[in-house]
Length: 170
Image (cartoon, rainbow, N blue to C red; front, side):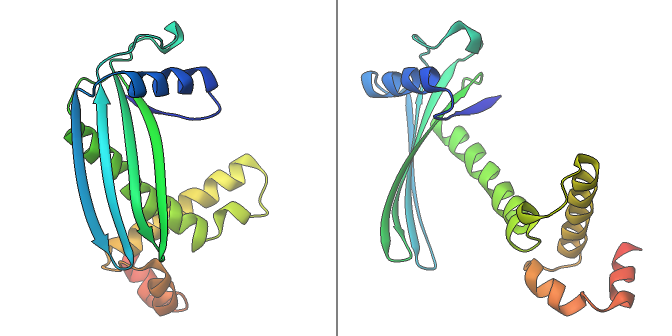
């Protein structure tokens, strides 16, 4: 199990930063990619050292530092995020797991937030919001399983075609 250390846990974040700044990494993975106008280099460093992390975070066996830097939209960016984990593995495996998580984030949550404008929904009742979210997820999965990689294009093509929409369900 991994957990991203954020500013809302200031003591944990301070301990994690202290570990990454004052210890040698046990494993490092560096990867680069260029996609469209974005060039990114990721440096994932793993520290199998948890001294200084509060006891409430028992089971921590690794501290992971992920550094992302590059160019996005012609602008330079540099981000650093930290994770803690109960796993003992190398930086390459953590890097793949973290990238996999962001793949899910970008493929599902981004589509729900941007295409379906879920975050701006006026629905405030928990059950209704949950049901709408489930229906949206089903719609995204149906469109993807029928060969649509762009949900926006799929909605434009089949949004008013009840026959094609119904044939996707069967």
